[in-house]
Length: 72
Image 1: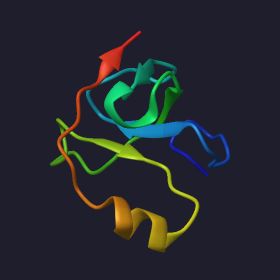
Image 2: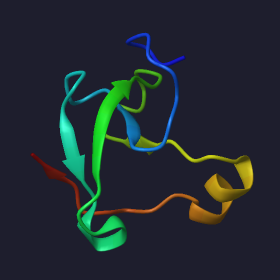
Image 3: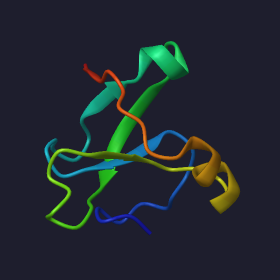
């Protein structure tokens, strides 16, 4: 369950620097897919975005990347 009370699912992200419900795109990796901010991270991660992945293995393959974020 995310910080705003919704179930985890494809298309959600965690970000401390955007309000809940903010919509973002990561066009260099996910084309036109729109992600919605529904979760938060520890406050030390004030400038990060965390993408929900279906498995731990998928998250490990993705790793840590610097990506361009478009706030819609």
